[in-house]
Amino acid sequence: AGHIALRRGSRRSQVETFKKALESLDGGNALIVFPEGGRSKSGRLQGFRGGPFKMAMKSGAPIVPISICDVARWYPKGTVLPIGVPTSARVVVHPPIDVRGDGLSEREALERTYAAINSALPDYQKGPETPPPIHD
View 1 (tube, helix red, strand yellow):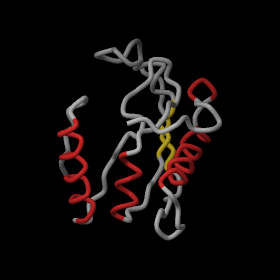
View 2 (view 1 turned 60 degrees about the vertical axis):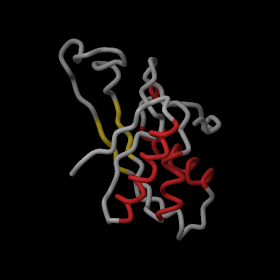
View 3 (view 1 turned 120 degrees about the horizontal axis):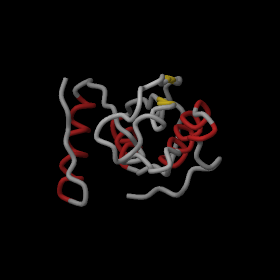
View 4 (view 1 turned 90 degrees about the vertical axis):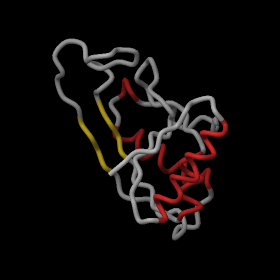
């Protein structure tokens, strides 16, 4: 187990992180990536960054969408510790998306991933029906 750190705002760090991530995937490892790049203040699903989908396309690794539900209510963005007493959270693991086998483009992989994650979120966490444009 390990981690690959990214320094936000550093183009060099982005390139190095991308290379390390591809090496890790090529070595048979799995990566956990949050495609939004961070949590939203509202707790709603926001637009995805393109990096994770570029990685999947280059490596051929499947994408396994995961919905993390109900955490924003008791652990909102900007808090150091959870507020109040945590109630419950729900994690939904969706079927893998085979980007190469299904012949998907980067955008199609992003749209399928976004739709899967959004489908399991409670209404107060859902993002727009159509994913916003990729931002990097």
